[in-house]
Amino acid sequence: MKDTELKRIRKIAGFTQINAAQLLGITNDYLNMIENNRRTPSTQLIERMAKLYHKKPEEIFLAARGTYCTKKSKKVG
Picture 1 (cartoon, rainbow, N blue to C red):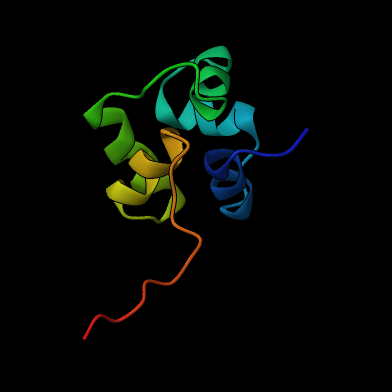
Picture 2: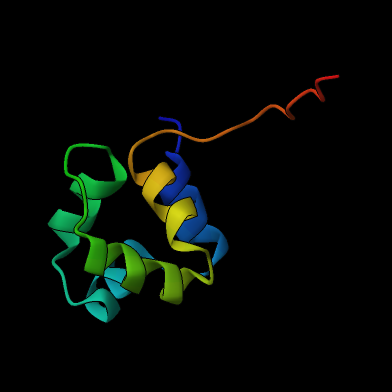
């Protein structure tokens, strides 16, 4: 099974799902649902995740929604 972007971010930050959930103050099951795009985290949780993973909140929000840019945009003009 391919890792989701949010799961990849967590792993790169060096956290297991269990210890990340504990540090975020949520259950492991809930973090699993977020990482697998079955739940959307609150704004406050996105901010805590961003701080824990050393990312910008918008990076966490887009990853949690399963949306992220993989192409560079072309210059117009």
